[in-house]
Picture 1 (tube, rainbow, N blue to C red):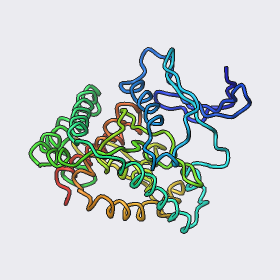
Picture 2 (cartoon, rainbow, N blue to C red; picture 1 turned 90 degrees about the vertical axis):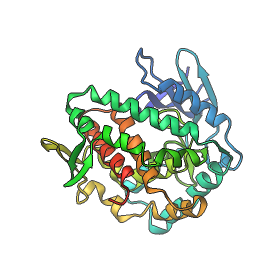
Picture 3 (cartoon, rainbow, N blue to C red; picture 1 turned 90 degrees about the horizontal axis):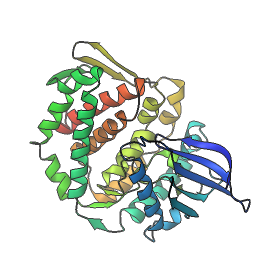
Length: 334
């Protein structure tokens, strides 16, 4: 049995540790938890992650670690090498260790890995992705409706969020049915995606991508999936929500506030360094102009999925963000 050195990431449904193998080599071990309630997608996502690493397209393979071992028995898991000389980009950004030139280099390499490597490896029908998005949003709405503090946000036809009149979550979901968004999403082909393209899952340098596959087990989807996930973290908003730096509250009946404190010292690195503009330019050149309705629809999906797996202020902010995004998906010009 390998010797556990320390925990690297205490995930929602799995545990990532640094271990020393019997040959003395340091490895990163990602493994499911031994629990009767592993989460709605935990085992499927980890199995998909193993298959993903085993079957990478050749252009993307240099940007991922080799799979050293994997298993599917009492637990599900795999091991990859430990790269002691490559910290993750979240750490480098938060510690302000990347100058503007380095930030551009990161985004150029990210474009090669994701756009030229993954997204260009072959297209498939977009219908399955659309069905997944629609069903998971619907399931999330039903799940969150069972929580009293979210019932008004979901069931009221209209609300006020940040001084803007918007539909409630269920009403936005219904309005999307007549907006043409689902039809456009179906018409756009799916590609192989990273699925969890946040700075914590990028090692530097050179660039190495880790922890692929979305929390719900997706390996293919609309290319916007990766762009939305990257920008949500690299621009600081997702970080602020996860660290519970935001204000997310009900002010009075049907009136809510979701506010990111950009003057907070903890968010300074995201304002001082640009980790997204250059990658977005690459994305537009590769995939064409961004459909803002679909962008916000996918962003709302992320928020509502994670609201099912979080608690306290983090969860409240996710629900408010989901409400805001679905409303914007209905009326992207507002």
